[in-house]
Length: 116
Image (cartoon, rainbow, N blue to C red; front, side):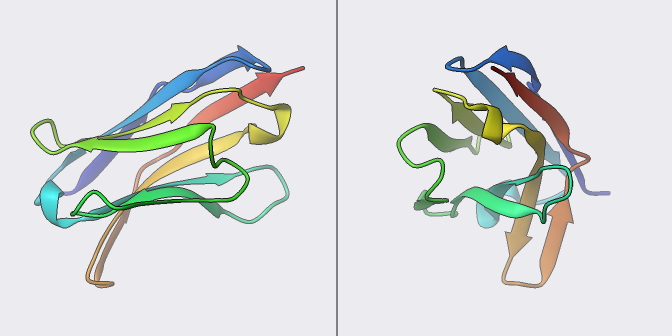
């Protein structure tokens, strides 16, 4: 059974930082592309950051220079380090694991709220 469990969300003031974690089980973690997505109320889910099995990374323009994605294959965990948070970063953040465009798994989401 595949599980992706996010943690680390919460309420933070603008300019603050948070670190999200996503612990995976039931998959060969090192072979998966891991991603963080977010969905704000009334908006579509969007890609925030992605890291490949080879540790290549990609970011949405809106978070470049502020967010960093990383992975620890020994711990089957992917992280999203978020700095200089803005109110517009408020959303539910979801962890995603995809492999060969065949296997595609999602976590349950964690709420991030950034106040003025």
